Image 1: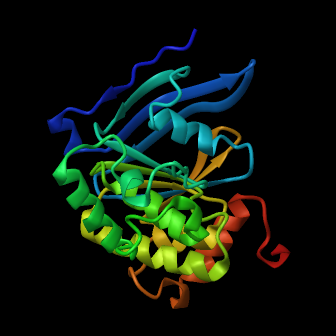
Image 2: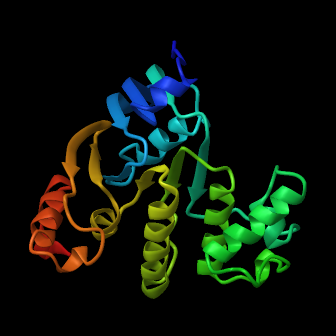
Length: 248
C-alpha cells in the first residue's frame, strides 16, 4: 500500500530546500513509473527535468504539486506551490485579469493582477477574454496567474511545448527575467535539451523511473548558446537520452 508522507516544509526547513524527496515510487496498475527517486531542489534554484515520453516526468511533477497522493516514499515540499501546464487552462468565462487572481479577493488582488500582467507584457489585456489571446499571450497570462500565488516552488510542465519557435524564444527571455526578479525555486519539465541548458542551473534526466543524470549548468545567464561549453553539454544530455547529436 502506498504511503503518503508529504508535508509542507517548515520555516527552518525552507532555508535548506524547496523540495526534498527520498525513495519516491509510483505505480499504475502494477507497472512501475517512478522507482525510488531521490530529489532535492534548493530555494531559488532552477532545475530542468528531461526524459523520454513515458519516463515519469509529469508523474513526478504531479506528486510534487500534491495532485497525486498515491505514492510511496518520503516527500517534503515548500508550502506555496504553483503549477503552469502546457495548456494555459484559462477559464473562458472569466476575463484575463480575473483569471490571474483566481481564488484571490479584494482590491489588493486587482492591483496584483495589474502588476503581474504588466510584468508579462499584458498590461492592456486585463479586461480581455481569453479567446482573444494568442498562444503566447495565453501562456504569459497563465504564468502571471502562477506568480500571483507568490510561490516558493514553481512547477512547469512543458509550458512552451505548443508555441512556435519565435514565441518560445520570447517566453524564455521573459521567464529568465521573472526568475531573476522573484527567485522562486523552479522545476521545468521539458523534452527540449536546448531549452533545459538555456534556462536551468541543473538539468536532471529521468530514465526508466530513476534519475540517471544530475548535471550542473555552470554557464553565464546570458548568451549560453554561444559559449564553448554549450555543444558538449548538449551532446552529453542527448547521449543520456539515447540520441546521437547527428540524429537530430
